[in-house]
Image 1 (cartoon, rainbow, N blue to C red):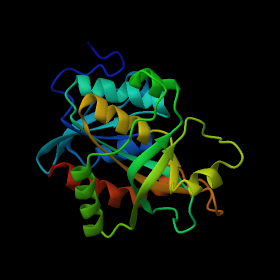
Image 2: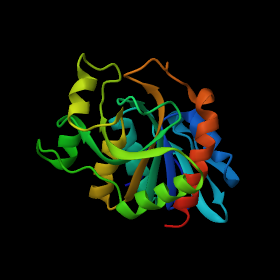
Image 3: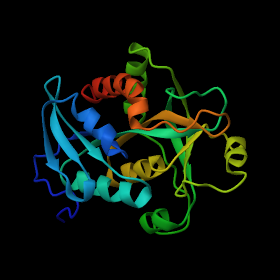
Image 4: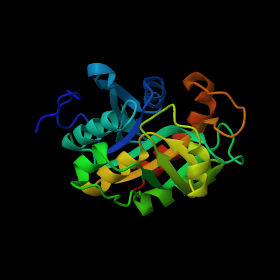
Length: 236
C-alpha cells in the first residue's frame, strides 16, 4: 500500500522517528539534525529527515488526536519507520508535576470503542504499553541531561475539553497526566511490531493554575528533552 498523506519515497524516512503533534515543535526538532531536509508537507504533515550524530533520523508531525496520529504512524511504517518516539505534551493531573516536567509514559489507558475497536476487532481494552528497553534507554538519557522526569501511566482521551469529574476519576485509577495520542501509538506499536515510547512534557496542569503553554513558551524545555530522546534513539 502506498501512503496517501506522507508523499515521501522509500528511503526518505528513517527507521528512527520522533513524532509530535505541533508543527512548530517538529520544525524545532529538525534543527537538531544534520543535513535536514523536508521530505513531506502534504496537509501540514511535515516530515524532515537528516542525521543525528551520523545516524539517520526523521521527525514528523502526527497532528491532534487518535485518527490523525494513527494515519501518520501507519504511513511512516509503510515507508520504513521501525522505532517511533512521541515527544509530545500533556496536562498534569497530580500537583507534584509542574510545567516543563516530563512524564515517561509506562502505559496508557483509553476509552474503548472508536478507532481502538476498529483496530482490535472487538470492544476490548488491549494493554497499551511501550517498548521497555527503549523506554529505559530514554529515561537514562533524561537523567544524564538533568531533566526532571517521572514514570507512570497516562490516559489518552479524544476530547480536549473533557467532562466534569474527569481528573478525579482518572487520578483515582492511577493516571498522572492526560494526552490524546499515546495509547494510539502504543497499540499500533504492538499490532505493527514497532518499537515505541512516549515522552510527555507538561504544558499545563489541570489541578493548579499554570495556564496553557504554547510551543514557543516550552522551547527551553523541549531542547533539553529533545537531546535526551535523540541520544537514546540512536543507541537502540
